[in-house]
Length: 123
Image 1 (cartoon, rainbow, N blue to C red):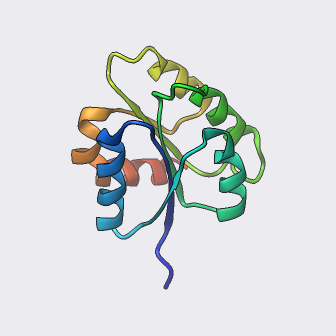
Image 2 (cartoon, rainbow, N blue to C red):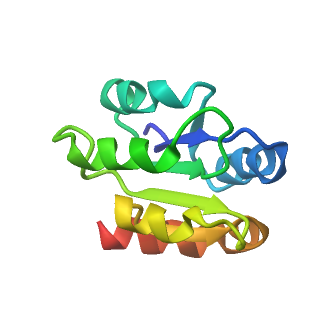
């Protein structure tokens, strides 16, 4: 049986790199996205079970990409977990854009199994 796929976008090594390792430990295949502009295209092509995205992107508007994912009929069903520092002003914007869950970077690793379960149950 094929392992479920998670697409992950991050620019900061912490927690991004550790998040990839944790997902693999939980039985996911992980594909990292280096260019946020390619996230929707990759989601259409790869058909992931879930998408995780860091809100702290220097060159792109992550919330706009989440909105695009949720407007696209081929990707709107894929739950998105957005994460960033709890001080990040984009946390409410990510929820408004369609993220299933918005989590703080400091807690995402410890709570990842529960967050995945909750995000997959919501959708």
